[in-house]
Image 1 (cartoon, helix red, strand yellow):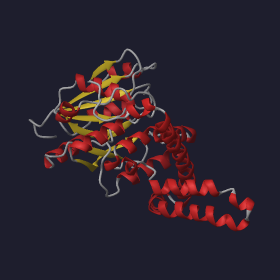
Image 2 (cartoon, helix red, strand yellow):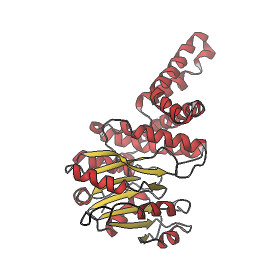
Image 3 (cartoon, one colour):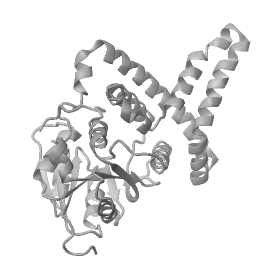
Image 4 (cartoon, one colour):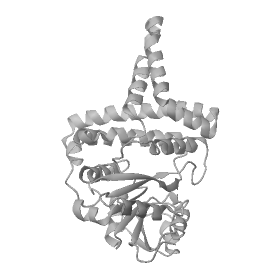
Length: 340
């Protein structure tokens, strides 16, 4: 147990129709080795029994009158909290018992650091098949790479309250699915303060288990990432995405040139080169998946990553076009205009 007198940590859990996982999530918070913890659940006007399940646990439940999105739900959780450290946790994530203690220790060891972003573990919270396993392994691999960290991981991560006092909370204009409100806030924090990733702040995620859901999410998030890329070039937010620019360029080249061999067989060199580039860029990931789960999973990962990258490419092109022709889309992601 952590020494008495340590800072109060407010764990903030936004929820929407989370009956499958919310109990696992909350039980993991109540089982933390750190004390004291204040647990706040914000029910984003769920249509199922999420709020009732949460109320059975030792926590504060804030009910929103209408579905408002994760950013607004997190802001309402911040407003109801009292901790010096705000630990954000998604309702489909369950923590390792030492996660909060490790996050606090990192903040204590790095007093200039504003935030500590955790990682997803290498197994699903609830195993629903191959698509989810690929998602989990891909996300885990990307997060454990030794590289600078910029964007926030608000599914499992902690920030100091003074960050909110100085910068405000999540931008409440960024509502709806895949609005990247978390990405925007993470970039805003990195613009003003140092941040860190802690590999020992671990949460196990119940990820998407249907390919069509992943494709839609990759496309939607890519659309709204474009203005952040244009407006935050110095931070290079695209480097934080699951699919890096070289991978997307390789997929785009392969797909765009795939019909060329129908005109002239010799032109097959272009899609072949694109595919070879795609595989080369993904070799570290595929090697990791092969070691963790075998050759079959590595082959499935290759095929799914190509499809997902294609969705990102289409989303990026759509977002760029929208950025050029839609002034309201450009204004929506300008920094420094946060709601309270």
